[in-house]
Image (cartoon, rainbow, N blue to C red):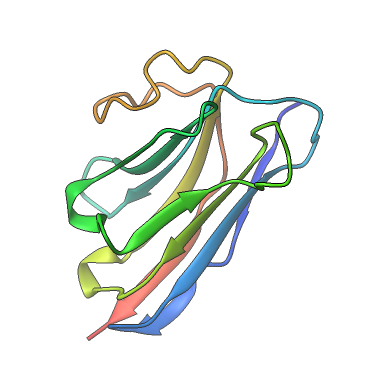
Length: 128
């Protein structure tokens, strides 16, 4: 059974960095797509970054140049997802969710939020 577990959230000051991790605890499969979303109270869940199994990535405009999504490069399968976040801003504050799907078909579409599996989220708080 797929269980995605996120870690690495925390509280930092603006300009700081955090690295989020997402692991499929079953570790027995390779996904077609994994992604990071964030949600702020009262707003819709926003797709921050996505990584397709062929290595292609997509970022939300506000995080381009500051965030980097990656997997375990030593492995040929996609079952781990990292999000390196640099130069954090207060507007990056939110609950960050990891998501995964066996299909890669709509992985890089910004509006696609229909993923098979979701983690519980890890909180990121950035103070000014």
